Image (cartoon, rainbow, N blue to C red; front, side, top):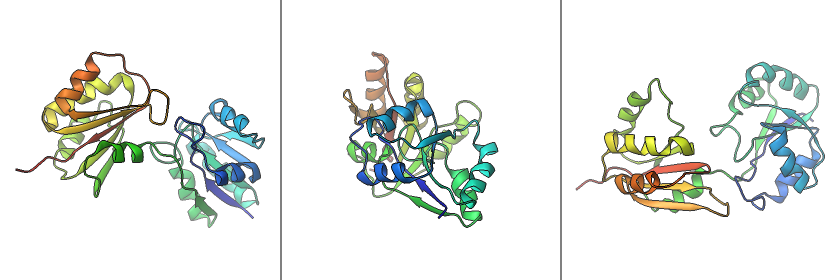
Length: 225
């Protein structure tokens, strides 16, 4: 019976993988992987021999129809990305949307995603929060920051290491130097770091070091007097 499984993969520590995820990846006909080389290491670790096809941001528009036709023909597929839950700042949305349009069953497994542990670890209010993901690199960036400055709750960002200092400097400009922030780096990995403080304090910390690894920033809401 045709079905698409959305399967989260570890964001660093290979042990953060569920028994059910391994079982599904062994049973499906095809695994759609963002980078088959990266995913190949994970599959080898868990002795998963299912064939892989590439599905990434550069080919997803042209491949969606082909994969949904194969699903309609009776295949079962699992979509994975290099790390974390597919469709969260990664490919996946277009395929899920097309499957739903064509009445193909979709099931998403629970599992690893970077922003949840970063948000909980931050110590900042998380009863309500806004997930921004990656900011625009150039066009529309300042307009977006001005909008985000109006929000009354914590905001979650993804950022690359080489842009972190620039982004924190812009946070000083748009949100103020005393706004509370938490930067989580290399979550679940050996050198995991969670740096908390004001935006100004955290900016100074990262200005003085070489930044590596995947970054999640949690910006606290403006504190009312």
